[in-house]
Length: 196
Image 1: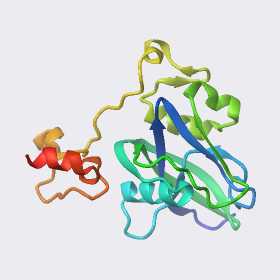
Image 2: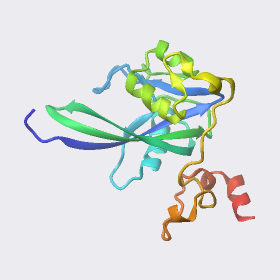
Image 3: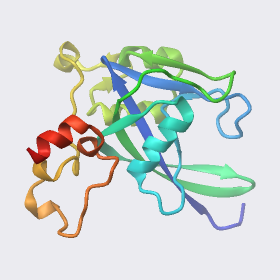
Image 4: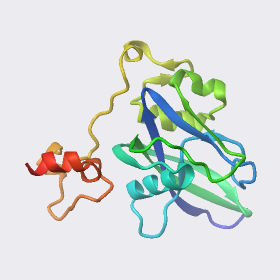
């Protein structure tokens, strides 16, 4: 373990539908955390944006298409891979599903649409609980949603770059063009409203 640490960049998709969060059990043949429950997540490909990577991983791991609702934060963890320490840097996104037919790549995997209050009982680890808590705006504790937030549906603040119309001018780079994964760019009805 005297080798220098490597860096890995990841993106996760916290998919929320009807006040439930999509969690997936990893295959038992996986090298990293076999059989663990968590949100769809994976390594970014070279040159890929974190938002694009989150949606690609969602498609690869569940067969679902989605639209980014918000970038909900970053997280990091250390792991060991082939005798080498790895620093994992993860960008987390709240995602609205555009399709609902989950298709898993391995027969020994499973998925659930779980209420936040059910996650700890299913065996979701502390790291994934924190990623989900981040996506739900901190409204999650070990027993589920906190206080008054439990009475209402899950709602998200606008994404920092969800739409140029919703971003204060000082935060928009002049040369920035919207990426195709932004929710208003993916949704034809929203795109029509934007240009009407």
